[in-house]
Length: 194
Image (cartoon, rainbow, N blue to C red):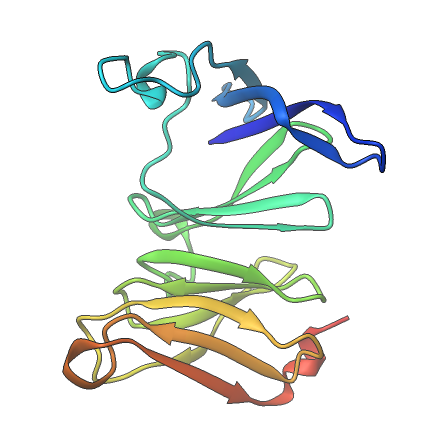
């Protein structure tokens, strides 16, 4: 897990991305993140790759989707079927779903993630049951939808229309002859917004 810290701000107060520091996360036993500076963020072909530069960096198992909402970063790791929550203001990291420990293990192959304006998370599966699963603000899970007949595909890119009345997502290889297909689903999604 990396972050970029700009060195300055422009005249409008926005971060100036021309100069800054790339950092990598180190997670301690209390699940607090400390950020470590990378000395060589743009290595050449014969240099040590960025992910191998700091042995103290925490390596997550198959990072996939990431989403930022209201001061919180959510991300998924497919290798261990986990959904994580990181709060930058406090440095706190926590697992909000882990297939291996869940009492409702209905979500596997965790992949893309998004959040509703109301704070619920939608996690798309790569494999698993080809579902989009809701994790509500209390941590409760429920399948929202399931695609059938496309077992060799994966769900990607869930996103809501601005008014929350439509959900869009794609099946990477679910169309004719293995091409992708994008779906638009209308429904009572407005109740998830606001």
